[in-house]
Image: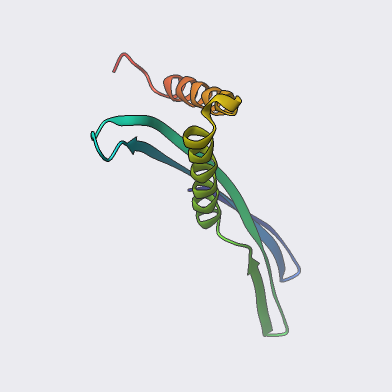
Length: 123
């Protein structure tokens, strides 16, 4: 998970906020329970972001603060990944000839290309 925290202060009063990003990848294998053969293999990914607001200040020795955060990015990324897995399996197992697999094949190609670019194969 990555994020940032920013704000500004003026005459003892502070206003700020933060933003966070989360990423999750799940390697999925579908097995034929009678033969133990792997019938499908795919990596499913999800990204999410979120943030919050922070106010604080003091005047003549009296101060306070208030903050609020939305749903955590990690929790949202996990939920998004579960939904993506469910939709992928529905397509893969129940209607593979309907053309829905093209969308997932394109995502897989992009994921592999991005992974290759992020690592050096010479190491």
